[in-house]
Image (cartoon, rainbow, N blue to C red; front, side):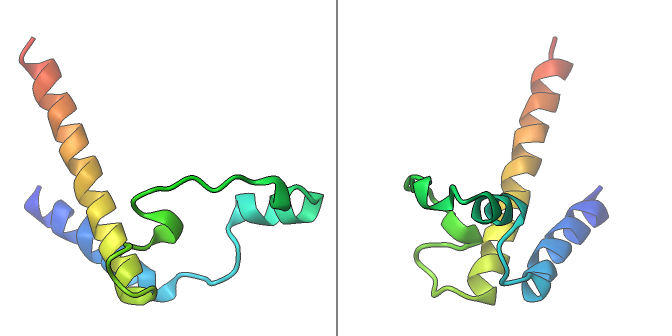
Length: 86
């Protein structure tokens, strides 16, 4: 299990260096159909797949990916513990 967690963190960290700077699918559709300018920005912790306290770039994106992986691993571990205690 530790190998899988390590592999997930490694992939999240390395994938940031191969990420495209082009808009993702939802942004592309919004631009194509002309309603992108109607979008409302809401404050979020990892807006744009980066961390606010790190300069924008690959390192910030990698750190956001690692935090995302750890968050969901913790969430699923908590769900597992909750349902196995019943």
